[in-house]
Structure formats: structure tokens, C-alpha cells
Amino acid sequence: MRFPNPSFAHLSRLTDDKGLFEHAKGTIPRSSHGYCVDDVARALIVVSRDPAFLTNTGQHRLRDVYLSFLLSAQDRQGQFHNRLGLNRLWQDQPSVEDCWGRALWGLGTYVSANSEVEPGEAALQAFTLGAVQRSPWLRSMAFAALGAIEVLQVIPRHREAISLLKDTAKRVGRPRSSKSWPWPEDRLQYANAILPDVLLGAGTALNDAALQEDGLLLLGWLLDLETCNGHLSVTPVGGRGPNNISPAFDQQPIEVAALADACARAFKVTRDLRWANGLELAIKWFLGFNDGNTPLYDPFGGGCCDGLEPNGRNENQGAESTLAALSALQQGRSLLKEFYE
Image 1 (cartoon, rainbow, N blue to C red):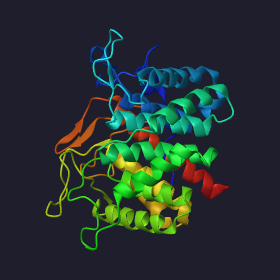
Image 2 (spheres, rainbow, N blue to C red):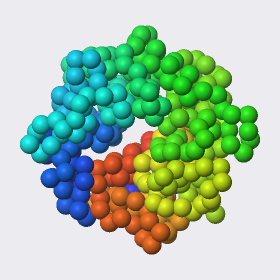
Image 3 (cartoon, rainbow, N blue to C red):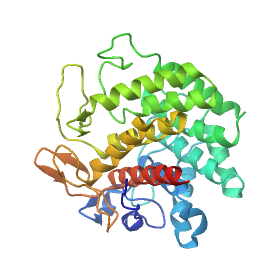
Image 4 (tube, one colour):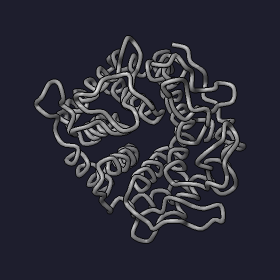
């Protein structure tokens, strides 16, 4: 496998001294649309995973901007605002929606990468405060649980992280008995692979082999379902039920990035090349090995188009899609390193 190294040029272009602009017109930031915690949390995950952000002082700016943004978005109960206007005023009330879950994921990832420095302590305090909350939305809980998994890598007895992770695994539940549709929901929705990813991570962190087995079963079923003619054909916007057929559009980079994350974790747990191949398919989807034979990632500029459409692609390169591509490429680079060590 040989893939482009992730470029942070477009991510830097989307970032100012306050945060990360959510949308772009082509490659130009649409600053009037402001910022959102969802994307800043994704960005903190990506920069925290990358060794360059620990050693390159020029890149510390992005990491520090994203952490500061998340810390400012949290209220005293541990919930999070999501949308900040260009006037630097929050446009919503704090909640435990996806922004809460993704913020905890970002903070937890930062903690695991910076456990021995002072900023890591600030992130840990914010994570701990947020981890006492619970959300009625499954994916919000799953995003938060991935943050808990990160914290437990460096603080194995962190009480709030353990409790959050156990509660989320229960919410995901066991696979259904149906071989044709073992998925714990009636329909696939978005970022679907996050559910088996959480079960795999929980199984490892909690030393629970049954959770790992459930995660591998669901991930294998999802990977098979979303593979068509040797390439990924992922669940589109609007979801997918048992009677829906593929290909279907619009396909979103976030779906592919979630699958890349889950396959990377599954390979680390099992060393089974099936999951390395799944990660390879995810990266290739961004490079044009998809239902439209259309590349979405620009390896020179570092941006990613916002979706795969029936007749091509959405040319805008927003934060969510760009971070999805960078995340998948990071996972691929990490996997290659493991092969050659």
C-alpha cells in the first residue's frame, strides 16, 4: 500500500485565531457561516494523532486553537455549545447532542497524546466534567465513548471514563439474531462504523472478549454490505434499510472515515489482514476507487470534496470532509508503520 501523506495545508487555510470555519466555497473559507464544535473536535483528534503536532512548533498553533475553542464551548454542567458566529457569540444553548460527544472524543484524544504536559490536564478536567452527562442519542454517546477509550489508555482507572464506556456499550446492545441484518438499529444512519468501533475499544479497555466479538461481527457485516465490485459503496445521506440497494448517493466522507477508524482498530486487536484491506478500501475511496470513479481528496492542496454525487462530486472542500480524509490517511500511515517495524 502506498498512499499520499496527509497534508494540513487546507486545514490551516480554514483555521483562524479563534477556530475552524465549517464551510468552504471550493477551497475558500466561508467565514460568514462561522464555526462549530463538531468540526473543531474532529480537528483536535486529527492534530493530536499526528506526531508533527508534538514536535513542530509552527503547527502548535492549530492544536492550541482547537483545544481553546472546545474549552470555551463547555458550560459548568459539562454540556457543550455547538455553533459560534463570526461575531464570537454562541448561537445555541449547551446540549448533549453530537457536539458534546465529539468534544469529549477530541478532549480524550488530546489527553492520551499529551498526558505528561499541563494542557493535557486542562483537557482531562473538561473531559471528566463532560463525562458525567448522558445523551439520549446513541451516536452522541458513541462519540463520547471513543474519548473515554482514549483516556483509559493513559489513566486505566478513570472512574467517569469507565462508567461512560460501560453505559455506551449497553446502549449499543448485542447484534440481532438475523444473519441478514444483525445491526442493532432498523436502519443504518451516519458514521455507522462508530458503533462496532466502540464495542471493540470497550472490549479492549474493559477486558471483555464478548464485546470484542460483537464489534468484529458488526464491523464485518457492515464492511461486506458497503463493499460493491471490489470498492466501497457506503451508506448515503438519508440512511439505508434492509430493502435498500446500492449504489446510492450522496455518499459522505464521514461514513468512510468512521469505517477506516474501525478497521484500523480491528487490525490492531486481531492482526487479521481483512481489516487492513478494509482500511485500504476506505483510503482508496477518497482517491477515486468508488462508485463514481471520482477522486475527492486533493493530495497537493490537502482538501477533500464534500461528497460523492450521482454525476460527480460536490466541489466544496469543507472542514468535515477534509478532516475525514486526513483521518483515513493517518490511519493508513500508522498501519504501514506497523507493517514495516
